[in-house]
Length: 218
Image (cartoon, rainbow, N blue to C red; front, side, top):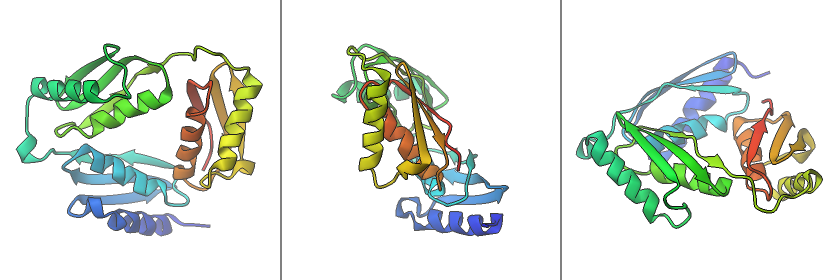
């Protein structure tokens, strides 16, 4: 059985492995399988990259992210200027529907509200904002509208299982799928948080799905 010290060793190794985190002041601690990330980064994508690195470590069941985004000095700006940059980035992205997203900026943190047609648009909007210089955090509250063509629940379940079968990241035998309307419920066990995330993402992109209730245990 892996100890907290074993997992901490691997967490620090994964953080050191990521070249895009070179120069960041990051540290971590692990207690009962819960990893706490500490330190500072200049850009929000670096904070997300650090989380992703920890999610790959076997045995980590949860992450508390206390990393602070300081922002590079050359991109210091007030919330009004940042809101204009974020709005322009969203409007220039062809994957994101115009005039249906409302954004709020507070001390560098961006909140997205409104509706989109598919989960991939929800993800694209969040990723687009992540990459805007000066952003220190993103809360993505975009709602995915029900698909125009409603598939029967059993067909949605079959398509999700087929998608799992095509994925090398997911052990299909350990993941159980239930569908209620357009909601997919995932239960079972996986080896890492990264595999848990992969199962949720694959299910979310399947036809007829608007949301995923991820109950998978690590």
